[in-house]
Amino acid sequence: MAFGVSFKYESEQLVEMIKKQNDCLKMLKSEKINIGWEKCRVQDGMGVSVCYKCTGFNHIATKCKDEEVCLKCLGNHKTMECTKEQINKCINCIRANKKFNPGLDVNHLTTNRQCPVYMKKLEHKRNRASY
Image (cartoon, rainbow, N blue to C red; front, side):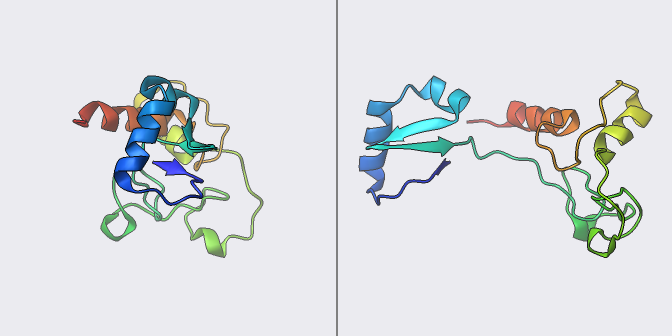
């Protein structure tokens, strides 16, 4: 998925420009791509679904049976109703440490995409994908 392309190109023209101007293997690693005279951000487009109720992965709030978790303070209430200060802790790493004891660093926000639990879920999803 490319971001920041300001010109409109036909699909075939765009594909040819990308092939001609970029090394496909380096493209995702550098997260940049050349299209015409522009350098655009690029991502593989794969992500992990996040529950807005419990902040767990691979399910959605309407199907969630777990308790509500506040993203700010990790309390059992809606984030929008929270009056407490933001704490720098990840509920998913805390849960993983309790369940599996891998000794994960919990000192990051739950929404951090460098979270070890998120990265593990993403790696699992990528390994199961058939490109």
